[in-house]
Length: 303
Image (cartoon, rainbow, N blue to C red; front, side, top):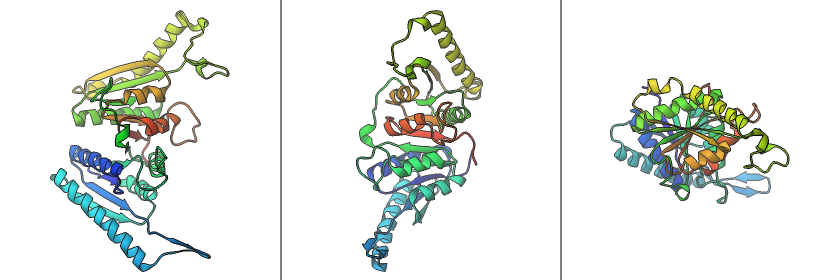
């Protein structure tokens, strides 16, 4: 069992408290320490030659942050008395502090939107930056108003499957999570026919020339992709009930739909589509914005 800590980025917001609850449970399952990190910003005042703040302002901000952090530690200690809880107060930007801490963490956890930023943003900039650049798996917890308790994969871990190396790492993490939680796993492989994204394509309407034999061949090929991706994992985790779902749909939409009622959605940081220079793929990005349960983003290689 990995002894590296679970690190939670806590900001005192409602979603941050939901993330703290997730982090406590993750640390308890893994039997590893929990490190609660709180990054605070000193309020500044614009002046003609720049910005300034007083020692008194800094002291008030620090004391408020220390109080939030102490309350979080107290709650976590009561919720999981068997784990070691530590805390850190940071003046670095939250994303920078969490990405750096992720180098020695087994898992990062944070809320999808905290106290900073504009309220109308669906996903906070800190969550985007951490999910994009962290070298360890990152769980992003959605606000309560986006959570759905019932759905086709209710009470299960859902993982997005494709032929990419990032997907292999996501599958490994998903099986570990399902085993730790004692629940089933649903592997979803979504595929699009090429005409869906063609100029002038209407989406959804299948041209006659790929019906019948050609269409059946595509389904067979995509089924082989799903089967190949899952090879060996059920032998390694025989206690995990596995459900395989092959769906003719865009990947992000399929995964968001499957996330309703799920305990966790696991995605690779980058799939087989898009530009290879992008660290966070469009499917991962869309699921972080719209999924109805916590989303774990897993990198293919830890650096």
